[in-house]
Amino acid sequence: MSKQNQKTPTPNTIARQMYRDYIDTGAQTEEDFLRLGYLRDQIANAKDAFAQLMRSESAMAA
Image 1 (spheres, helix red, strand yellow):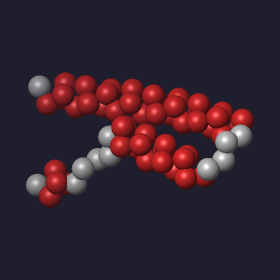
Image 2 (cartoon, helix red, strand yellow; image 1 turned 60 degrees about the vertical axis):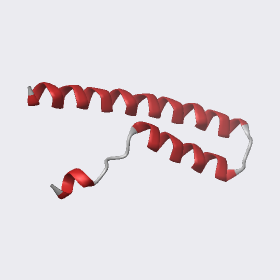
Image 3 (cartoon, one colour; image 1 turned 180 degrees about the vertical axis):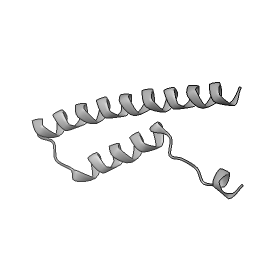
């Protein structure tokens, strides 16, 4: 039961933290913009993986 109380961070929570970390650097170079694009790709991949995990867990529970 205690495991249910522990929240797994959602892709949006991870994305917000990554964005805050990016903003905290304060740099505005081309490299930073490329890094932000990379982070967007990673966020999209995380969302896809999370959705796939949720679908597979729902299928196993049914």
